[in-house]
Image (cartoon, rainbow, N blue to C red; front, side, top):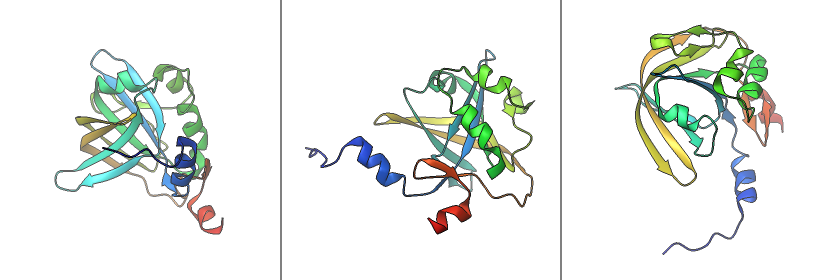
Length: 171
């Protein structure tokens, strides 16, 4: 039997917000040509051999059904100067196609949208989808990577706002 927590979801979110995370833009394409575009900060590498990563998405996300049906998914690690992309892809009420309409992109492997201005991209096929609480964990087998060296720091999320990594050290 699980005991009831002694905190609410708002307090839990605030506590977790004290851990700075990177910010990624996820794009995906279905076999029927449907696209997803969303901002995710719950991303991590899982394995080097084979190359595997994961990210988590709330099951109530408007992009959820497209992601589940996607044959290809790309994860773009955003730089500090790409906050506009992060904000656009985080906008609720827009379809993936509407979010991509205002952003420059090129078709990548199997047509998955790739954002050319990002410093790093990983793309692959969905391996597993695991439901846990109100979120779903997507595991990807990575078969495409691209690294574009840059001196611009990564975009991070800390205590409810976008920041650069150096800003988190001084707050």
